[in-house]
Amino acid sequence: MTTQIDISEFIKPLVQKKVGYAALIGRPNSGKSTFINALIDEKVSAVSSKPQTTQKTIRGIYNDAESQIIFFDTPGIHESKEELNIIINAQAAVALEDADVIVRFIDISRQRGEEEEKISELLKWIKKPVILVYSKSDLKHATEARKDAISISSRNKNGFSELLATIKKSLPTGPLFYDEDYYTDQDMETRIREIIREKIFLNLGEELPYDILVDVDDLTEENGMIKALVMLYVAKDSQKNILIGKQGTVLQNIGKLARIELEKILEKKVYILLRVKTMSKWNKNPNVLKKYFG
Ligand SMILES: Nc1nc2c(ncn2[C@@H]2O[C@H](COP(=O)(O)OP(=O)(O)OP(=O)(O)O)[C@@H](O)[C@H]2O)c(=O)[nH]1
Ligand SMILES: [Mg+2]
Image (cartoon, rainbow, N blue to C red; front, side, top):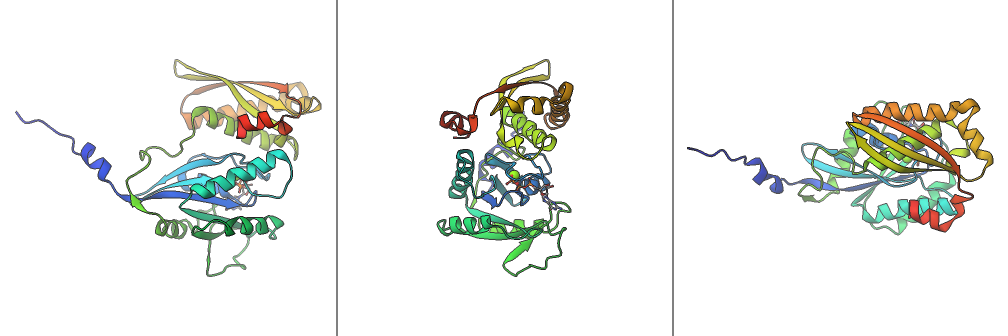
């Protein structure tokens, strides 16, 4: 009698590819999160037209025949002395330390802002290869195109293969860090929080989204259904009514859009209960900031 041996299990540790970390950095709104989502073809990171949508570094994992690239989608670097923003900038700086290669996004659809100076300053201290990317090339014909930059458009997926090939040149060869089925290392709680944050950004005016802290208080899974009790903390009482909206319409809409998207992502039924509460000046409270962003 012959015994069948599955040799793939033995070969797995020997698979060697270009494997490593690439940190995306750029001013807020330059299209970093949109790029990750478009490249991986999954919603990994929240996107909105407002700056500083990303608050914590998110990992998106890209696999192909010759490489595994773990992208750090960092929060946009910007000028501000607010406590929360300082922490957000620090998140991006830490990701740079961990990366093999840095991909710097410059949004060619806008005038260069002061933030670019700040980013250049930060990168001076980090002795790592930096790839310059001009993002949103569909919006403005690459008038600014230079030889040292790669133009990309996440809207029509242009420039991706050139960018990937350039990143791979800076990566070491080695065994895979993640199973190839994974496209993110975020747990379910984080994914729920991020999608709800995105819907908050989409549904509310300019300032308020930054004052809302999303916290998944309770998460259970029963008979294939995910149930999440999610607290939305506002920084002052007067913000409660705006978030809830007339007869609860704004809050309901946020919950509904988040549920629809999460059901698609998680391929399960999802039930979300949103509760609104005031946590006075949470965004200035060092303990709260440490707990949620530390
Ligand atoms: N036309 C066009 N719009 C884009 C492209 N990439 C991103 N955008 C838009 O730019 C806005 C900001 O995109 P994000 O991906 O959230 O930008 P970000 O750099 O992650 O921003 P922060 O998280 O705030 O740092 C959104 O409205 C996107 O739809 C692109 O290639 N073309
Ligand atoms: Mg982002």
